[in-house]
Length: 235
Length: 234
Image 1 (cartoon, rainbow over the protein chains, first blue to last red):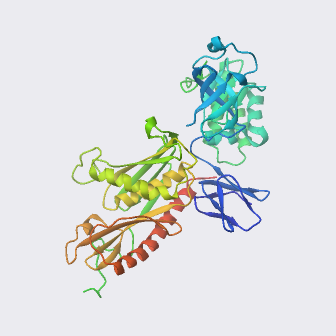
Image 2: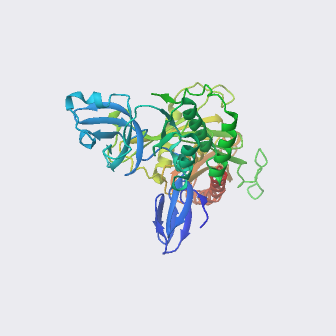
Image 3: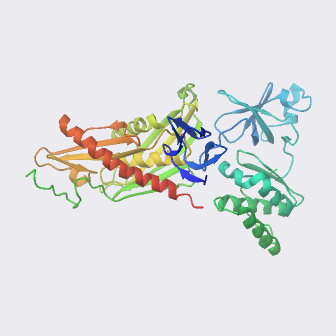
């Protein structure tokens, strides 16, 4: 099925063979959209991909957040969403002395974490896996969380292209925060400009090719790093 | 006199609305936004949230809250309106909330609030209807789950003639029985979420009014649908 834009209350497909997925609801025979976005069908599962709105945390998402507060048994993390997130000491890879928790992670430190549970009261995070933990250096930029799938690309095609072209290490949080770490600040800023370019053109098809040519053009120029780093948070 | 077709001051047919325009994404800083206009009446709506409810004592741990704020800008009417909330705007804010709440599915957002700010840029009657239409668009644009859309239109009775989408001049009509203004909000499925009555009407005429409202609201819905669909370009 071709992707199409649907609005709340609109019937996407009707028939018993379809299953309602995210952003849809079954009303009698029909699958009805309850969100505004792009409707997509795969293996009889119909879902609506939201294109705007705030980030909604889901289990298994890798997110980037900022330490807001330290409690006696963990850290409160601001992950750019309305529900508070909590990272307990028990979910850290190494032993942490409860008297010196601020030495491990202090307020305003940035951290890459994974959501291992969402319940009514809050979000639970973990850093007990590879690739997670406190961010020591690099820059962090913010994009609209709905554009994150485009920044990553199909099976990571876009993010791998960026990594290959710039040699930077890029971690994309599902909440829209992106951590860029490279050897040179120029490389990091190039990644930033590339991601801004992707976010702007997120509706074009064949975006990976376009970004490839964007890199060919922008790298040839060898533009000096412009003074556009106010948005990026330097660590 | 009633057999003759009633002549409206702007030359419209009785069941004809003013030209409508709608646009989404007019406020880049908001999570969702929209503009809706009926001729000279222009409303913009901005949606922020779902976000944490503040102050904490207003939090509802059972379900999410909708908070609307209707505001008429001081330059929206010919005589400068005193800025800030007043009795009328507070009432319309509340009525707008009630008109929108039945279609919103915010029960999954406990302790959170969805803020809707409606501003009237230009007023020529039917501002609450334009505001509700803009707010519904903005809520959809913000990705808030909704059962269906709502659309709103005002039906008027001028003496004994029923007309759709009143303008200020018609609201001030004084001949015969005078003017009656009935703003109605309907869901796409045709359920009423909001109806107000300012004036006098009998039950037979009110049935006729509802019939007109259903027809006019279909047109409003088509405009809203078009605006949402066309805001995404591939």
